[in-house]
Image 1: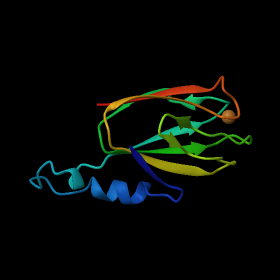
Image 2: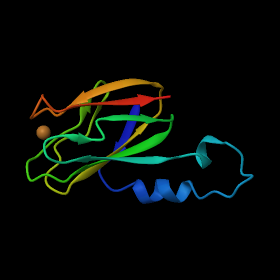
Image 3: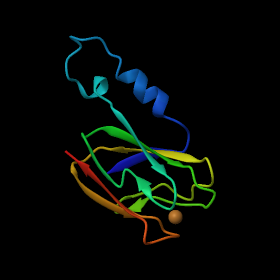
Length: 111
Ligand SMILES: [Cu+2]
């Protein structure tokens, strides 16, 4: 359902969006990227809508460790300043929480 890298795939994904006009709408040329920042014990934005194939980078800006954990994906433990990138390859609604702080919730809608 998803794939992830612990390293920053964000730059690669951004590079892919710079395909010239006229390259068509092939999947390889349409990789988009989004960021969810974890700050103040909250996901920002908590509600995010993206297109299929978009890579979402979760960045932990808090001192406390967090995760973004949903059905079929998990960033794993993110310490201060850590980030993880997940690519959402299937449409759907993905609710997620922080495993350490279950009151932290978010939703990614993939269209
Ligand atoms: Cu947390």
